[in-house]
Image 1 (cartoon, rainbow, N blue to C red):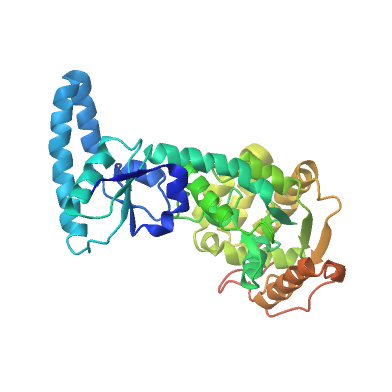
Image 2: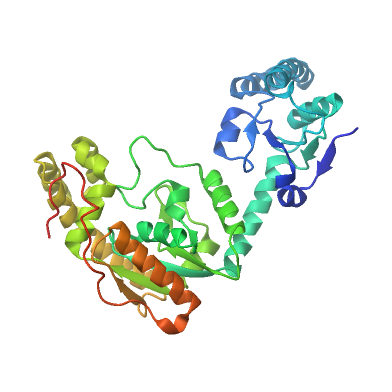
Length: 381
């Protein structure tokens, strides 16, 4: 047999045919981004790559290749012993490295010599990345987006989740970015993906959407945390029709106290995040909010943040950037409870299937305070 080399577009179309996708690059290259579902079998790890690079620069390319071959053979033998001994002859892997060269070539050659039905990605990750970027330019234009807008704490992300539960198509950018989109948005202990990994996850999500059905997404800024939303997608969202979720201030505070309960439990982490607002709100205002938080008045701080910072910023940003905002239809929610959101999601989902029904107006019936955090201060108007 011989290793079958396949182009990136062909590999992408056939990803489900492979029993494994194997990334032969180093662990740091893999962590930045990789093909969907890929596992990491480094032919050379980070330290080994650095060593070979130094030998190439300081001694010669020939000596570097000899040393690299020794290390690669040792690593490949370990991968085969750990992962391949129990595999059947019919096992079909796709192997790649950065450019489809020596690292993946050595691994693919040995897998093929064993008798596995081995394929190698022509051009490696670099060609896959180029295909992703091409698709991110083209895919948004084919989709019919509908944007959920609303002030901070009005339950937009929760409504997306409820819409997905109703069977609607949803693109949850904040979930993909692992960030809630504000200065307080990163959950302590979590990390955002690298930009390339975010774009690959987004590419995968867009490819899974049906162009014949509407897609719900949340109104987003140009950046979510430290990650950038690709411009073609952002442009489509900003030109899409909008539904604006409206919720009483007290209910918004209660929802935020629940969703950001980690800051109630860790006041100093909350105060540290508030410090990032000094440039926008001034040192005196931030110091007062920090003092209130340390006194246990978290809900009061949240309410002032909404009224003095987030709401004005939101209104200006939406009016400036989202063309459908001025004519958006309103969806009023009494609170962010599960039943209330499910009711609203059901209506929105049906409304797009039967446009003549119109959007639900008027508040939903009050529900139990499912958004309260045990032990948290009560929400204040």
